[in-house]
Length: 491
Image (cartoon, rainbow, N blue to C red; front, side, top):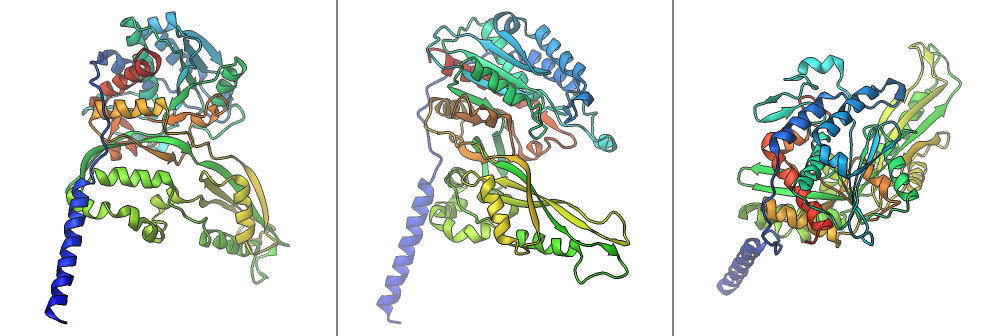
């Protein structure tokens, strides 16, 4: 190769490297023009006390309501009345169902749509055989090692008590809202849409009163405190603007059955196994959603320069990376409607050929798909026409809430101003929340809990040693106070 060609190639390569370095250096977190917020007072001692008392109330929901200890819900609600007297004196309270609550703080301007802050009072049970695995008993609310330990500490009594605490403090300070503020508390969110689900009853109650909401704020997103050496040391947040749907399908195969001593080539279980493999080998098509692009962009902008050298090119690389990403289960769940075979049943006895073999398949439905699409997909990929397909029930994906709204703007400004971080990224929540049941009264539904959480602590929700860092509680209450001020006051 001639010398001048080599020089040209080397120069071009150098320019590309230099250009990429400059692009990476400029590929920094987006900044918002945030006004200086006045300080917010928080009675942190009272908040911690009430949160611990709430955790001690064993408000475990049960699909069989006769097995639910409603006395525990009454005890917690009575404690709220005692600890927050101004709230219960000023706001109107309405009971819905067995333990649902609607608090209404009437604003001075009735032409403005109310905002709603919602949550659930119930928690998941603790398995008796796992009690000994807990560092501190799950309903003792121990305050140790910088944490409050106990079931519901992160899901979501911290959030519920934080809302009540913020309202009580605002009342103590003499704040009067222009826009009405409504607090809705369900009691069986941890169950998957039972016949007596509280959230639909509460939202229907609002609808029957002719109430249309400006927006809803529920759990779903969080503020992650990330510290990975040489990669990222920053806080990142996500606001859920939608959530996946959920449905269960039963697939089954009938057969003659008989004695296992004279089996056919394939029993009903064998035939069913082929159908299961067809489903697992033919997942829904993966796609890179706009929300996924935003999350990746937000995250990579907050990494070190070395990582940003690659990250700044991700928008161009994502289409090529899609096949790789779709093979990583945690990532793939964001990219497609997922298929999970969760239950199977065959013969009741080892020496009897099954007359019927069944499998239950759970699908988490990405917005853009629906339950009808799931059934069509099953029929397309299960090639055995003798397989029966039956939908056992479910709920469609939620609507996708807009991001160019005053509520989303307020969430972003508070986070950026209080936590010195990038604006929260919109995303699709993988699980189910009560929020989807409020689509009849607003299309602006946001899932965000304003507590800074290390990932390992966040993952303990529903698990052993669920706990929450004490040092993040005060800012959570400040967020709720500022949120109500900005959306319901003169700011």
